[in-house]
Image 1: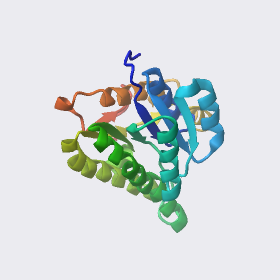
Image 2 (image 1 turned 135 degrees about the vertical axis):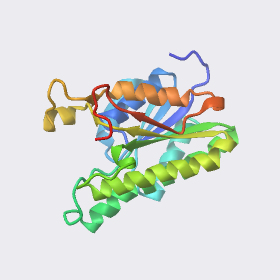
Image 3 (image 1 turned 135 degrees about the horizontal axis):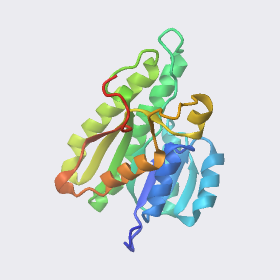
Length: 240
């Protein structure tokens, strides 16, 4: 745990009971104050009660520009200037072309891509003023190769990767570390255990281990920043 007196302020956009919660817990453990964005107030409210004053529940639909602006104002007023942004939300539509409705496709894009764009626009001015910052985007296997039967999810994840690369070119020279993490595998969550029912030897990524990798990126010295990192379990088959 950090001994720094200054507590850095972070926002995790897209907090649920899996990786989102693990990211919040890791940031708080490392001495950060964290604003938690989620559409539903119930889970983030419980997590805030668990973690105490350093975790702020800020129910926000990140696909809505006004809600994102209000969420950032809330965090800035209660916690301080935002120095770390993790854009973690994504649409979960996993259907092929003809089973994906136009509304579902647009919603997936608005949550994953437009939402990340809105959050970055709110976070960056304060980071530039402070002379430093970190923005991390959560990617997936579909960020680098489209998956059959997931047109909305795959296209949105491709776009998030492009957004991260573009922002890195723009913002690295100005002191803001932008990175993209490809999670190449299935995350071990209660929902996965209930619905997917993996076997004992199934390659699954532990949320807490993923969160450690995010923190390592945030801590990197600017002389050796990473733009993209891919994470997969040791027994995951490569390139399949």
